[in-house]
Amino acid sequence: MNKLVNILAALLFAPLLALAAGDEVKLDRAPIVERDMLSLQRGARHFVNYCLGCHSANYMRYNRLTDIGLSEKQILDNLIFTGGKVGDLMKTAMDPKEAKEWFGTAAPDLTVIARSRASPAGSGADWLYTYLRGFYRDASRPSGWNNIVYPNVAMPHALWELQGEQILKMETVPGPGYPVQKRKLELAKPGSLAPLEYDRMVADLVNYLDYMAEPARADRKLIGIYVLAFLAFMWVLAYLLKKEYWKDVH
Image (cartoon, rainbow, N blue to C red):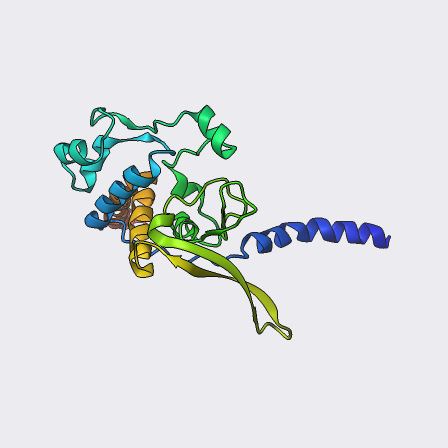
C-alpha cells in the first residue's frame, strides 16, 4: 500500500519538480521597446552580421524591414551581401549538412524563436536576452563554450569578441535555514565592448528577433483596440434600441 502511495505521489509531483528544475536560472528582463525604430534597425544589422551566417529566417523577407523605417536602397546597400533581391527570404548560406557535421546539429531557424521560447519564467525576449549574455568558457564542450541558460548547448559563442570571455563560479549564499550554492558568471577577459555596451547591443538584437517573430503585432494590437471601441459603441446603441422597443411592455 505504501509503495502505491509513493508511486502516486511521484506521478503527481513530477511535473512540479520538472518546472522547478527548468526555472532554476532566473531570466533577466529584456530592456526593449517594440516600436523603437532605431533599436530595431540596429538589431537588424546585428542579426545580418552575426546570426544570418549560420541561422536562417525562412519566414521573413528583407522588404519587411521597410516597416521599421528602412528604405529598399538602405536594405540593399547595408543588409544584403549575397547579390539577392529585397523581396528575397532571409536565408543562410550555410549548408545544413555541413552545420550538422561541424556543430552536431543544424542551426535552427530564428524567425519565431522569440515566441517559441516564451515560458512561465519569462517572455521569449527575456530568455534570449539572458541566453546571449550567459555564455562562459567550458573546456569540456566541443566548442569550448557552455551556457548558463541552455546547458551543453551546441552553439559556440558567436559574440565572444564583443563580450569577452566569462567563467562560471560557484558562490555560497544564505538560504532558508542553510547555505546554498549559487552559480555566478564572472568576466575573465574583456571584449571590445564594455559590459553595458554589450548589454545594449544584445537588447537591440533581441528587440529585432522579437519583432521578427510577429511583425504585425503593433497593428494587431491597434486593430484590437478599434474593435473593442466599436463593440462598446454598438452595445450602447443596442441597449438604447432595446429600451425603445420594450418601453411599452415594461
